[in-house]
Length: 194
Image (cartoon, rainbow, N blue to C red; front, top):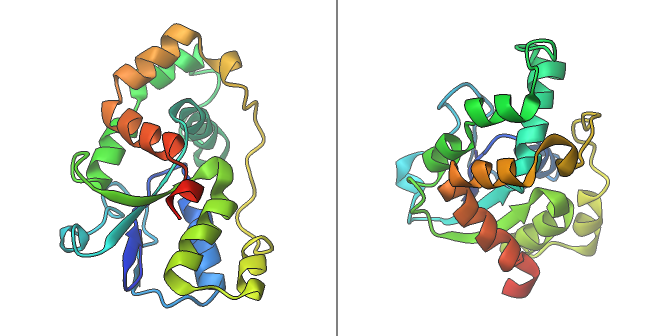
């Protein structure tokens, strides 16, 4: 979670939060509070922020988030192996944490989000958000695109190679709050809000 004077960005795993934090710190923006501890429940925003400051939510399409998550667990965290996960889609559906995580960071889905940062358009959306709140110079805008963030994991990102259409429907059936915010983010891109 990263907090500024007028807005905050909850950190929802696998949606670009680490990159957002790195960019904001590197740009020396006036950060009020930043939570780096990603242990269970340690990164959700304090309740006093809700309704007092604008909420900006980073998000990505749920199937992509889950593919990224399982690859992180195997490649980085090493808490599971591909041998243990015979059928990745079924494993994801069984272990799905997206709904719990987004509910923890959005007051059970009641958070009114002013802007979304879509991870597929992270730099572009982040530039628009930061420019809205900080009236960035051209040099600052350009800097967003040059700051080194963590390396991307190498894996197959083709959703249809991971999930059947029925499994994708099941992902969203199990994650109605995620679906709600994802629909808002992708139906009304930030560029249309200005």
